[in-house]
Every structure is written in C-alpha cells, then in structure tokens.
Length: 355
Ligand code: ATP
Image (cartoon, rainbow, N blue to C red; front, top):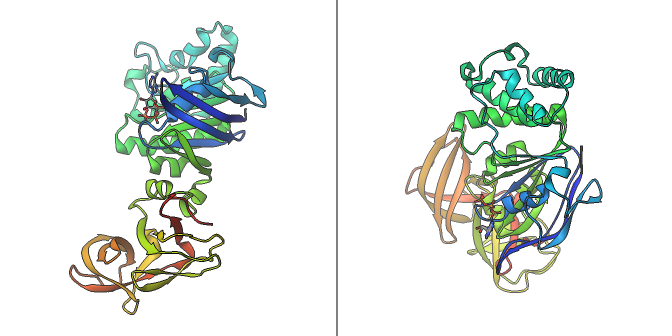
C-alpha cells in the first residue's frame, strides 16, 4: 500500500514540454485516474512514477520517501502494460505462477500465492485448465491475477482496456474496480475515455497540453469544472457554452444571455471585462413555454425517459435534455429554462471558472 506524491514534476523532450510543473497526491488505496486527450502527457507522467522516465525537474515521493532517481525495479510498483497477454501453452495456474517463478520465489510460497489469488478472483476451479479453452471473462481474470500476484505497493495502468471491444470493456471495468475494492492497492490508471474515468475513479485528474487542470472526485470535477476545457471534456453530450456580455460585478446573481436574464449561483469574484461564458449542461436545462430565453428546435432525439432537444438560439446551438412530456418538434419555437444552481460562469479570456 502506498501514497504517491508528485511535486512540481516537469519533463521536457528537447524544446517540447510534455509535462509541466505538475502536482498531485494519490492517497493510499485510491483508484486514481489520469484523464486527458491523446498526447497530453498522461503516459509520460505514469512512466516517471514508474521510474521508466527521468523527470527534467521535480520530485516523486512514495510513502514520503523521495524515489525520483530510484531505479524502476526498486520501487515495488507494478506497471501493467498489457493486461491481456497470457502464455497460451501454459495452464491457468502456470500463468499465475510465472511472475513469481521468474523472480525465484520458493515453490511452496508460489503455490500459496497462486491459491490465494485464484480465490480472490474466483477462478480456483480453473487452475488446471489450459488458457486457450477459457471463456473471455475468465481469461481476463487470469490476466488480472498475473498482474497482482507479486503484491506490489501500487499499480500503474496505461489504457489497459483500450484494445477491448465495447461490451467486454464494460465488463472488465467493473471487474477491475471490484478487484481494486477487494485488494485496496493504490492504482493510477491512464485513459482518454471520460466515461471510463467517471465510472471507475475515486479521484480524477484532468490533463491537457502537459498540465493538470483539475483534480478531485468525479462528481466535483463534473459539477464544478475549473476550466472550460475540463467542462467540455467531461460529460456527454458536452456542456453548452453561451456567450454573455460583461462586466459582471462580484455578488451578482443574474447574467444577461442575449437579452434574457438568467439566475446564477452568487458570484464571489467579478468578471472585469465583457467576455463571459455561461456553462450549462444539457440536464440543467428544461423546455418551458413561458421562459424568456427562446430558440427554434433543430433536432430531437428520443432517449426513453428523456429527449435530447437541439435548439438554435441567438446565443448559439444548445442541447437540452428535456422531459418527455409534450414532445418538441423540429421547427417549433420553444422557451428554455435554466437550472440556476448548477450553472457555471467562466471568464472567456482565461477560460477559468469564476468562483
Ligand atoms: P497518448 O494517449 O497518445 O499516449 P499521452 O497523454 O499519454 O497520450 P504522452 O505519451 O505522455 O501523452 O506524450 C506527451 C507528449 O510528449 C506527446 O506529444 C509525445 O509525442 C511527446 N513525447 C513522449 N515521449 C517522447 C520522447 N521520448 N521523445 C519526444 N517526445 C516525446
């Protein structure tokens, strides 16, 4: 078990900054997800934690001990590259035993560990089976077992589910998360898939262009995004961004969106210039005949209990996750009501959320 801290971590490749002044604390036992688009520096961060990449500057602490320059093999951290490669000519037990055998662990100890991991993963009855005959889910369990059998202090996983098809990915997501809950080892997990991140993480850090923009529990990152990038990257369909005209004084509780007054959570800091952006998620909007903010229906998708209505307004195209009562039709003029307490106001120049 381990706490991982990175302090002012920085990695340059020539002139290119892959990771910029990053700070993070991964608490003991957390399932921590690094989330961001391709090329944002997730893998480089993970490789530095593993000891496979030396930082240009900054420190990495493992349980308070500075391991920045410690060799990878001395860190007792498992880097899970490819979760799903098994040795086809070996049976389940042999596959599980392999990592211990190659480290020269005594036979009796190997037997004990294999039995324990098999019990943990509920595959005891399969220990003698050739891996080629296993059903998909069991194969993945064996692969997981092989990754955890050395009982490292922490796991680092780089898009381990990336190559699976959608159905399997859902299954493995659950399996991995449950396994984490059972063994409780600190895990840092890299993905560009926000749904994966939201569904698995205790904590998420959102990265872009080498920088950590925000870290926190999934619901906090979703509900209180620190920047427009975070707000747009998490959530599907994405948050609506509506331009508003400033300035807006500290203490204000309404903003004007194309002539309509919209209530917002009380602002503590002012917007000093004229470029503001109101962020509203589709589920924070509702169709309402009497609402002052109006637009014309561009498209309607039925989602069962809700409908996703796309509305063209003078403030741009907006998606509304509306109730299914009274169906909107393409071409209708509709009013849109804002769920005020959930709205976020951004500074349109810095793209940061105003407090
Ligand atoms: P992906 O999901 O595509 O792997 P990522 O977020 O994991 O993306 P990194 O692999 O950390 O991103 O790479 C960040 C940036 O650093 C990329 O632009 C990459 O091209 C660059 N980079 C990574 N390793 C090196 C290297 N050894 N030499 C030069 N540039 C590198």
